[in-house]
Image (cartoon, rainbow, N blue to C red; front, top):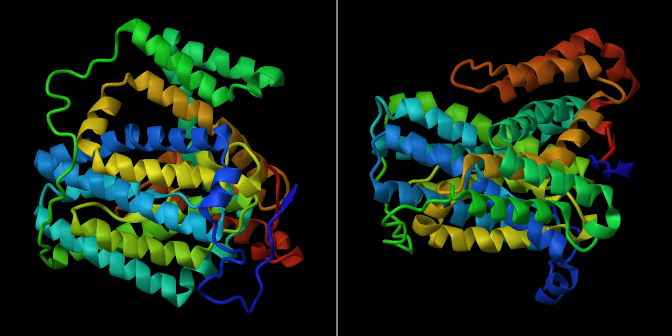
Length: 427
């Protein structure tokens, strides 16, 4: 059992680190193979499927290759910088990325809005996120919803990683199946796993299987451009774009994405700064918008990967690793994106699923082990359903509907202890 510190009623809005920032000597002392690997797996995950979503949305919306490259540069460079700075200051893993549900929202909008109008909405979203973060409203909402309900939403989001793992084994038994077998072997025999972390073993064996299968194909012209040239698009202020995109994007960042990230980190025994994460997401969103990229956020899956193994006090070095390699990836995004997209989908799905299994297990355990189980179940079911209302995805509605039903069906749980006082979570 890990006990997360209770919130003090007089805690300042802008959370103080409580520790001195990590120095280069601290990082060198604390880092190790597990943490470097977790940071690299976080990058592999972000640079594969999520990048494919960006490319798909951009191509459907008619963006030029230069605009797409600038978008990818922005999300990785800004996310990496936020991750690096905040993780060093707070000495805990704080992995920032970009809102994938928000990216999906942009796709239909590009069918009837111009790219400059969408960029204007990105800037407005950044301002709204900062304002909401500084009001303290975000922190109050996150403290009001019981942890089991939040983690049930997280479990609903993470469930696809597990099902994709199973599907990848069915589609590519040689590649994904060999990865699963090696992971199970290294997990079952600690003497092996001590020298070769299970996820690293799966990564290496899978890479060998991909090479042996001949399914890694870069194609011609993959390295025509190595370093990105960021492209600035002047924003246009459109009422239609503001109504359609700004509020849904802000909700996906602050409630869905940051909510997942905070819940995952708390479940891992950390105490993430909610307001700082919100304000940082807003500032990052403004910088990202300047180069044509979507809003920044504290991501759930990435932080689950960063905290999947190792000592809690040293896990910040996984985030430091992720921050550094994300910045490099952003600068070299044209070439590195081509490499990731040339990798078979089954390899990426299997690697992401294997790395996420411990977090998925922890999410289920936290959701259904004690109280608020009705609300947790409903939040999980709604999130998995894919429900979308007002262009806002199912994860948000899972939280809202799950919390409302929990209040209606299990009031005794709230009378025994305030929702925000749930501090015991098993991992």
